[in-house]
Image 1 (cartoon, helix red, strand yellow):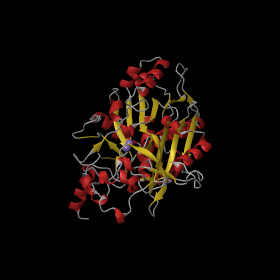
Image 2: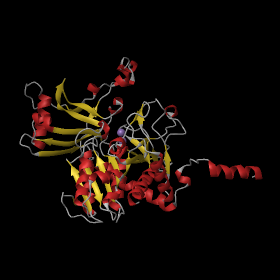
Image 3: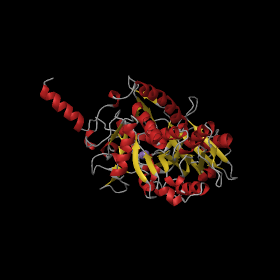
Length: 467
Ligand code: MN
Ligand code: MN
């Protein structure tokens, strides 16, 4: 290299923000750890397809790792490991720090609900001797993607006498699955002229559940009757019990490695389990933190965070207040001194659809966990927009601990957009920034992430809560 070029190269190295593939920087030990972490994560994905199941899996892990259920008024001391479940659909995990709680808590917030098809409250009907369930989709989906794939049914039914039945059908190889049909191309001439939003309409998302009539009786709705009879024998439920049920149709696929090099993971519900699982593991692996750690795995993010299990409700705030009271502090002051990572996914640059991203400001697969200063749409509406100071603090922290990270926003300005729970936590006077894993085909029944990015999310959350 000529002397002149050496000078400009050295100056570039110093002055340019070099955005490199994470595999050019990751240590051998981190690379090995990322492969192992991915195996644990895939197991979690397969077992926790709904928010309720994610809570069950989390609590099982927490109990095994010495966490106990928090009761208000508990005598708490540094190193105590506690959790509180909110109505079976969200969980808050805490490890009490050595520093006074007035110095603030290290919050990590991720969501455990994912887009899916919920059953309506009167779901069952028979049409031309086929039995079907009516659904109402949950979260932002491209409806046509949910047809012609195997679907499993998960959830709970509260019977007339108040007892609860838990349902999970379609995950075991021997289970039946369910199915939303699409039109054959031969007869789709009219359908294919519709805009994609109407290709499959909300009322077309009907789940095929059976076809055999009840015995040979000459009765109407014999197929529906046969299904109800099967359900009665299996679960002891009648049709009216659906009214007090929450049944969710989710893709029946298992999480799998993608690519010859096995660098990627395909799975349902990466958004936001690829952040909630690392956040859970970081909390579990955290020993004797300086500041009190509070990790919340929340519900209802995909429908806007409203409702008493979503982060627009006060359940997180109340938990902080309860904790503060038990440690002799004022919850309001704790919140004002706290910091939060809003752990949610971002869109990964897709070479097949480059036009939706601005290439200098989007997340790329394998460049590490993505720090997003602001989200929102139409001029940053609905965002918390982290301050330059807090962004700077997080950037320094990540660099000092060899976390491979990048920055990116969700798509081009005016291309669309999206929000996270960051704004709701920032509104409690908490310094908050978004950080998460880039996802390909987000909200599709089968999404894709990279193992390197997943592990760097875990590392980032672990470093943050331990700081
Ligand atoms: Mn999300
Ligand atoms: Mn989402």
